Length: 78
Image (cartoon, rainbow, N blue to C red):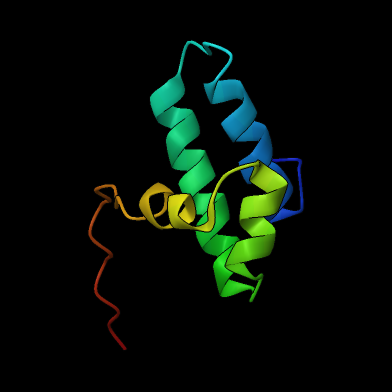
């Protein structure tokens, strides 16, 4: 999955696997969300993303709404 350079393609592939009873749907949802966030940061239009994933534009909002916990960043000292 990491070898797919295009963030929308990566999200679409993860989305397809989610619906095929993949054994790790939670990880795929996170991969999809990360890829969608990257596509939005890159300036890809929500309507285009939704079209490529075969979902509605409103779906993109909830697909990207859940943040996951991460380790706190180490403070930068200079």
